Amino acid sequence: MGFIDDAKETAETAGRKAKDAFEDTKDRIGDKVDEVKADAEVKKAEAERDSVKTRNEVKENIRDA
Image (cartoon, rainbow, N blue to C red; front, side, top):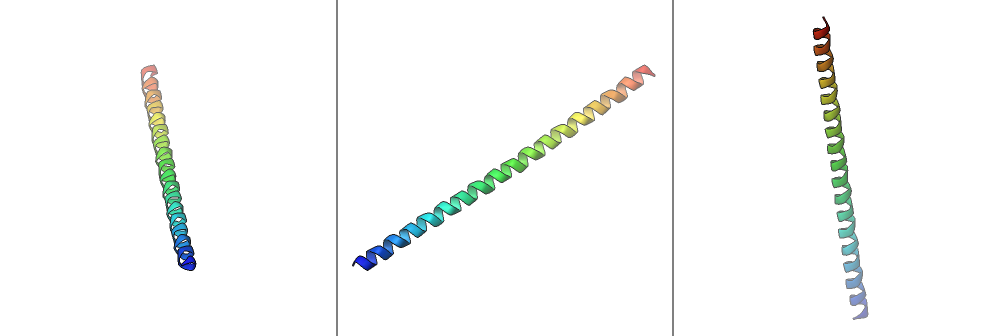
């Protein structure tokens, strides 16, 4: 019975390690997705800021003319 018990324990350990590796990979992918989304939001905000700045400059030039 010792051999069977050892094999069962080894299989359970391998299963746990595989599950842990899957969870780690899933978390890393989720973190990367969050990072990409945050970068996109920053770029969008910067583009909007630049647009508003340009629009305000045009308005100011029209007022001065």
